[in-house]
Amino acid sequence: MNRTSICVAVVLLASVLVLGQDSNKSAASQPSSSPEASAGAPASSNTPWFSQRHSRYQLRPGDIFDLSFEYTPEFNQTVTVQPDGYVTLRNVGDIYVVGQTVPEVTTNLTNAYSMILNHPVVSVVMKDFEKPYFIADGQVGHPGKYELRDDTTVVQAIAEAGGFLPSAKHSQVVLYRRVSDQWVHAQLLDVKKMESQHDLSEDLHLQPGDMLYVPKNRLSKVLPFLPTSSLSMIPRTP
Picture 1 (cartoon, rainbow, N blue to C red):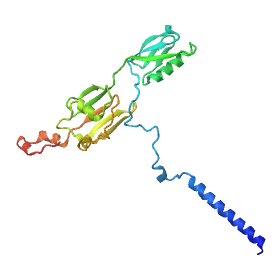
Picture 2 (picture 1 turned 135 degrees about the vertical axis):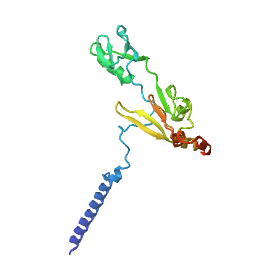
Picture 3 (picture 1 turned 60 degrees about the vertical axis):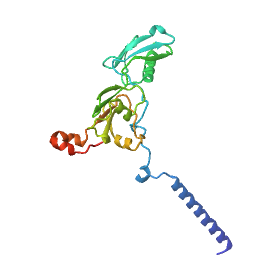
């Protein structure tokens, strides 16, 4: 083999090596489609976030709001949401608003009045509406419905409802939250662990309409069936 042939062979070999390195880099840069690689991917944005806070109020039947027009005050009116979820508007007719937030209602009513007015500027101000609340049930001092006035956590809500009864099972408090008309999400909370470890990092913040249920502990379920003379030998449970 002469010198020219050797040079050509060396050039071809170098080209092959470079192409091989480029293909390896390209393969390494591609995302893996294996289940192991996708297992750590974040959940979809559509997945409900149970501890989400500061949700917007959604209109309900019986709510009352003022509808004001900046440039055409003759269309100003006070509107009541009917039991079927509709409001009857002057010169526009019936519009469904239940389940919508104030910004959503404002947008929809602005669009409706755009059919008869030129670039209407509409504002919606709630006048009378259902106050935010939570419900505490089960083994608490005062079961019932409570107004949710401030940012309140589960532990704070239980204290507001009179605290735990001796028959309460602190380790299995259930927080029910309605995510949609067909779906209610439930989560178990170990309040006993939170208080014993002085760690409230898992103490969830309540949203309007949440319900807390505190079940009975095992001992309180069997006490009615025990003879009175044997009750003094049973140790108290926290």
